[in-house]
Image (cartoon, rainbow, N blue to C red):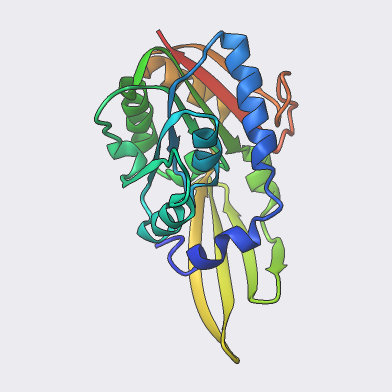
Length: 245
């Protein structure tokens, strides 16, 4: 399963992710919709970095992820907050909340990890039901152009305690991008090797818009990467916002 071995080193390997800039862009979108949320869900929250940022702004936050290892790290990070998020383990397509919220966000291509279109359509329906009227769903995807361009590429991430080598392959027929990861994590004087395989599905914007509409969303908008403008044809990351009627 993805993010079992990688969980312990995830924050170290993603310390260049501009979470604060993504949050600032969320606020720009919220302002456009005239939405002032008091509660939020961070869907596919991982180690909870975005959930913590939202909670520090005073929102009541619930973090949802299917990886027990990632959620354990998220809970540890949130332990010292005065207004900590709560974390629950659920798959996106099984989302079920105790009460509706004003905002659902899903950052860092969490949607791409739902690799069955039928499951994603169910996820959209669940998110819509989880929102208060007028609430917003904001997420981003790795574009089809980006995932196709990764085919055959090899990448290396490392620091003093972890070394991660990953290779990407894109299948035109299945629209799946496979990341094979070899992870070496330092334990004392030795290095522990593990391997994970991650899959992302190359969704097309037009089908996502259609499925959001079918799920009950209105005012669906698409944006370039952290810009309030339409995405370019070869945009690598695309943001999508949709409102519950």
